[in-house]
Length: 395
Ligand code: NAD
Image: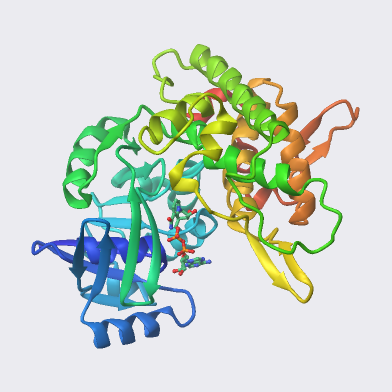
């Protein structure tokens, strides 16, 4: 019997618990440190008998074995540990569970977001060498809880998800086992750096928020604007320019790390055309891809309802996860590589103002900006880990 422990209790954790818990040779535990979640899961499982995962073409029902807010009750003996939660929770969870991880076990994040490997090194120290660490480029499913502790709906499954591993030569073996467990196609890539650069959420989410709200005058909206379909030509340009900046960085890293394959770090327009081959009505431009992608149809910008209408939600993950654990990480690598990123900087500066954080600050001569703001410690920028040369990035 293989023991798999899932850390986290949200949409992704419900999907994993129902999916993996349905396998006769797998025992699923859940580590749920957030206040109240252990009780809500226990009540749900007691009443419903397990978690139902509703896929477009069927249902999978799985019953977790143990759920607990105490790592000592669920982690020991686990062969695989899955971090299925937002990137801002990775560090706390890794520190909580470190002493319960057994030698040779696998630990991975779905999705990894930027700089996951450095966070792992920082939290686990030398212990990391006794483990195998992996990260997925994205969460394979678009999923939402229907009833907590009871059911989750999977709206779509990615046809292929890229995966990085540490040590890198274990990626193939790990991908094969995880593919079998998750029922997905996984493609090993050379390094976590590839995942960091290829994270398209870091461009789309903050970029579209910036495009939608940079000229906002503070007046409430009468309805929630469309998020992807609301893209105009100016915002398309911002997204394309940020994507170009990443391609310049990719080219620079290719010269620094000639043995590594960065080909999977594609321009945003290539990524969207490949990821949604059957969903895009008009693939002519990035704007048309966003506007005519059926998977994005009707999705609205994150907003909160105020007394007089809708207000932008600047505390949404699109700024609080995708900036410090996405765009800022990539910007940090660019800073070390000497690659200029003026458009990325513009988006980060606007985002940090909305979230009242400070990442980028003017350097002494005021001719440039550097990632030296007071909130760098709450990001995964390489500067936060004290890396000073590019070769230190390949950990
Ligand atoms: P979620 O909001 O449903 O998960 C939140 C859960 O994370 C909480 O219920 C809690 O269990 C855990 N958590 C949050 N903060 C914590 C903390 N400080 N300490 C301990 N636990 C904490 O998120 P999700 O939808 O499951 O998404 C997980 C990740 O996948 C995120 O990075 C998200 O951006 C990404 N993602 C999700 C989807 C999707 O369709 N759900 C799609 C693509 C990517």
